[in-house]
Length: 308
Image (cartoon, rainbow, N blue to C red; front, side):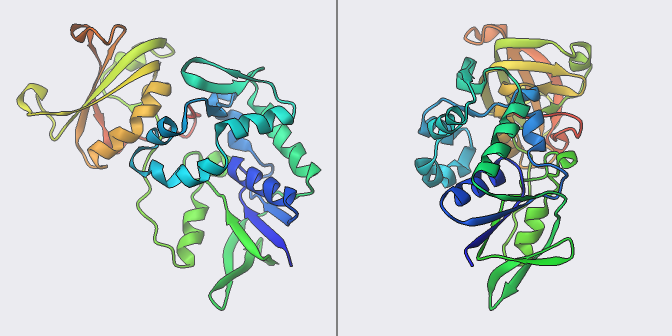
């Protein structure tokens, strides 16, 4: 039986299912929500930032210390391959500041529509409302899944359930539970590519303000106190677009820094000061953007789409 089961109908699951089917496999795509691609449809504020045009080394660097894990996969399928795929499917693309690539018409649902049509063209069996409760083992090998109380068998199972970033779209961490149930060790999950929550009233007062081409500097402290009394505080710098929101700061520049903020603070109650500048090369031009950021509070708000 050359059947492959794919768990999760997001971007990764749909691409994995479609590619396997295009290579001749019988593929069943199991999605627990009523329709696949729900997070794609709201990503990038409804525009869907598909990828970035930067080169491989720079791309990997943006994933932090674990970026090297992706190198082998990217050597087989990288940003230009994705661009070529969507262009072949009839989706016109546009490259914006910072190398970000979007659908030309700026409609994320168009991406979902194209992926669903592709799955149909390559004969993927799409099964919505299909929640996988368990991986089925036999002689130490996975032989299928228990889905809605019924066994479904396959030669291989691809786990593409995503993380926990947006539960309303189906990202509830099912993959961690399923992987752990068959012996995998799960490291502590942590925020990544998320906005930051700030103290003080500056962000609420400037809610909706969108700044382009600004520098952002985040200074990490080992304690809550005066930065001038701390020796060599860790400084993080980035340049790009910044968005003030009622709870804090967002936008591509903040999302880029968020991974490093979490790493630097170690998910414990250290403190961080955030500064912004419209002329970042002039060191005296920095001004406080917020008082203190608690890394325990860095999260993805349940009602916000946080894709870069």
